[in-house]
Image (cartoon, rainbow, N blue to C red):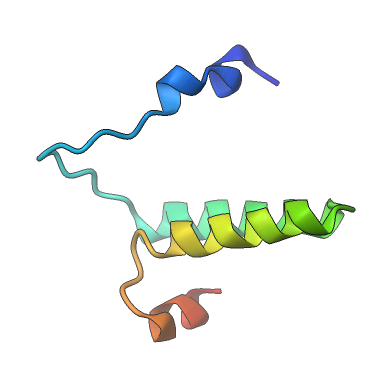
Length: 72
């Protein structure tokens, strides 16, 4: 695993007035990759956490549950 991914200090989210626009294409691509990884996971706990991550990521661009269900 690259050092950049292991360095937790770089992953701190801070509250700010800055707005980052995230495209639905990026979200859809990342969700598809996470779902593919989940299919290879043997651990139920890992699959559970990947599913939570998918829902959190979908929530970044899709406003309600109907939009999320349609995107998935």
